[in-house]
Image (cartoon, rainbow over all chains, first blue to last red; front, side, top):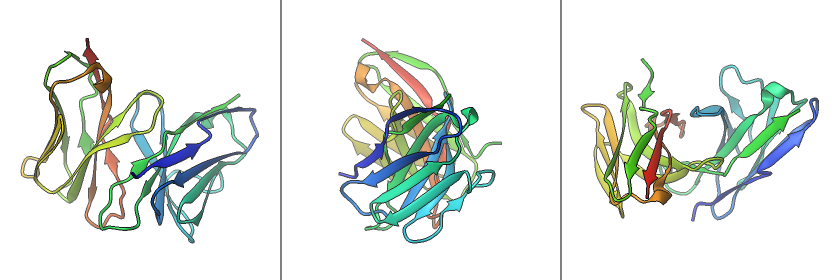
Length: 117
Length: 112
C-alpha cells in the first residue's frame, strides 16, 4: 500500500519551456503533498507544501511564480516549472501524507529528472 | 550545528554483516523518526517509522531512538547486496504538519 506515482520520470527540454510534473497517490487520499528538490549527493530540500483546495506554502527562497503548484484533488498535485532554465535542472521528488490516521509518514514518488538544455 | 547530522559514508561491508547507521539531532522537539532507503535515481522508500523513544523491529531491520541522547540508529542484519543504497534519516516535530528534516544520507555498499 501507500503508493505514490510521479510522472514523467525524465524530461529533457529547451530553455524557456514550461514543464509540468504530476504526483498521484494511487491507493490513498492525501490532503497534503510535498515537493522536494534534490541535487547530486545531497539530501532532499523541501520546496513547498501543497494542500488540497488551497494555496501552496513555499519555503524561503523558492519562487512561487517560478514553481506553480496545483492540488486540485485528494490524489493529485502538480508542479509546473515555468520558463525553465539550465539552473532549474535537478531531481524533483513529491511525497504524500495519508489523510486517514494521525501522524502518518510521508510516502515518496520515484522522482522526475529534469534536464534543461 | 545542523539540525540533523548523518555521516555520508560511504560504508562498505561484506554480505551477511550487521550494518549500523546513525543520526544525531539537536532539536528536542522532534518526536517522529523515520528511515528511508533511496536507490540511485529513485525516490526514498519508507523503511521504518517510530514515535518517541524505543525500539522497533521489522524483519532484518531494527530502528532505535534514544531521545535523551538525541540519537537514532538503524540496524540491518544479514545484509544483502540488494541493501546497497543511500539511507536517509528523517524526523519531525509534533504538530509540524509533516515537515521532515532529513539527514544527508549514508551510502551503503554490501559486497557479495
